[in-house]
Image (cartoon, rainbow, N blue to C red; front, side):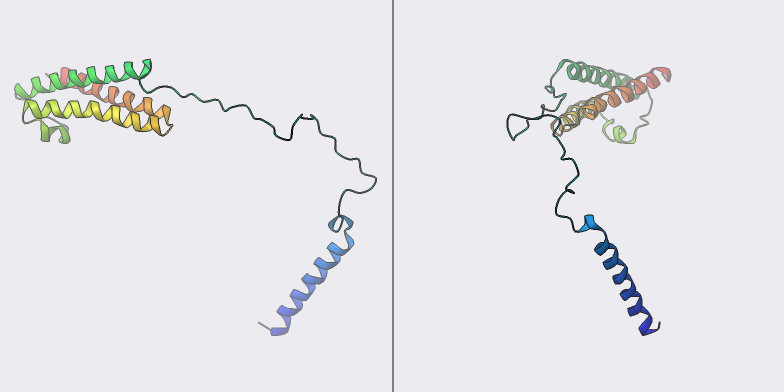
Length: 159
């Protein structure tokens, strides 16, 4: 790099910028041009403060009808899954879910597993409800209902 070339380039850029901003009248103007029309507000308000409409929210109580139905369906299908799994295990079958396999050695352990699953669905749904994720709140129950229905169907088909 030649030392004189870089400083010459900086000087050329500075000269171009000064000439552009020096020649352009609007760059130094303090307001609108004298012959330009002044903008007219479309609507005049009685006060300086404009009130916005409240945002549309879909807040609902946690224990509304839809959640009650979803939680009841999840609990019913978890109960059916418990009963069929217990029946299959007592008939010599084996548990395919590795998490449930830990609890499936006794009826009490199996009951705790499925009761905990139902309580977990309600707890996670409540967490999503409190953080404003109302669609996810419903989806937790729907996913649990789907998985329990699939497990019940599989257990009934493989008796």
